[in-house]
Length: 191
Length: 155
Image 1: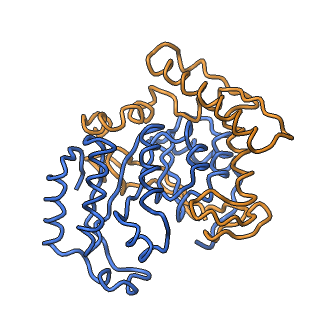
Image 2: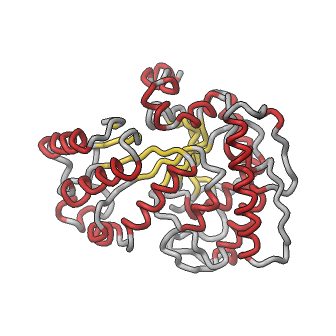
Image 3: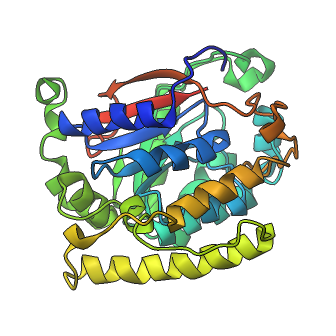
């Protein structure tokens, strides 16, 4: 993302302190993705005065090193879990090793903090992606894991490059997704 | 005002489904437990400024386990969190120091592009040395337990 104003760590810390005093529940770090900005955020925290929980809003594709830095800092992780197969992740997002990285980080965020998972259901990706994601969550993270299942996918940006992503989710697909959730045993799904 | 926009969020921190998934977060958000960074900022970490990255990690991991046991003591009511002090060289300072070192051949995200962002080179993420603030606002569109959420977009 281009643009933006250079603010000092101290100035950002003051904004966060003020937000907390007017009743915000947390500080929500986003980007793009907040991963490249982790060192900046750590410095901001050095200047904060209020007790404001850290909500780390990420695509989850961060390194082991980043994961170690986040431990003892992040109170609540929100991870966008997008793909259930490396093939889909590679084809749509151009990233390698997706499943291994995401499942590793989901597990460590759950053990070193608390976790909220967001899944945006993609048209045509129920069997290859949604299914494996739901069974991984139920099996490895527990059926009480909080999952926000979203139906509002809309074709934007480079969606036209993937034929199946040129449309919205159909009603039939959304109903099938809800059926998959109830079959998965997950008990804490917002939809 | 936000209570009118998001009536579902008002009692979210007492919702049993929220409490089962994120009990500690709920208490921190209510202000009855300290955020994790406050605990890490209260643990002293004595690292050698000339030390290698590997040595910094060793000190980090030792201090992190100290922070974790302190958090358990606080959470079980065995210590008053108002006693948390602010160490001049804390685990949080060390984390910031290591974070900066990782930008020299950047491995923060799993693409591990290795660009020297500390020198201003752009990583595959298109971010260089500096974080700019693109926008910040009270976000009302997140999950009920999270709103209102002070959202800061770095770019």
